[in-house]
Image 1 (tube, rainbow, N blue to C red):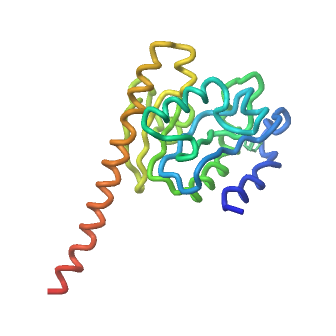
Image 2: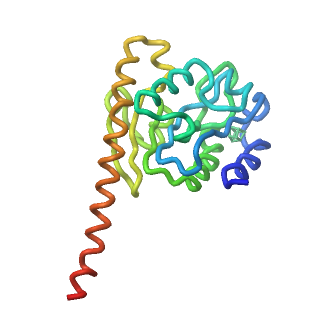
Length: 202
Ligand code: SF4
């Protein structure tokens, strides 16, 4: 059993907020335990609630297409949501629900230790880019504590507003370069840390 599988068993019976009363299945997340990139959306929808898997409805199909644009599959990355149970009638998640569910996502990220976190939509953006507006910061990144954060619209936004489809695709295409730049900066920092020791040898 992997650490993530163990964690899923802990999450499955969770009753730490009232969504436990209306959900069909908990939707913890899925993907590679050693993924470089974690995509974080908002909340499970109708399809996800029935299957216990994230992003399996129309927005998930678009996310698969987006991953394909940069040569990735679902199994190459990790996909999760800010909350693990479906809000009734797909309403927005409430602050107490987001707060109660935070520990699960935090533990997933502790296990995966990704190089990059991509926020999909307003709710995950609010956690990692507090006080920001998605129409202003989508397609931009920042680095904190060794992790690159990159903000995108939620794929479902393209289903409601066709004009956003191109915007979302263009943002997705930036990800490989943002990840490469961030990794190169890490290597440069490591070299700088090594240099004083090397000099002291002579
Ligand atoms: S949404 Fe999160 S905190 Fe609430 S019951 Fe589901 S797993 Fe537990």
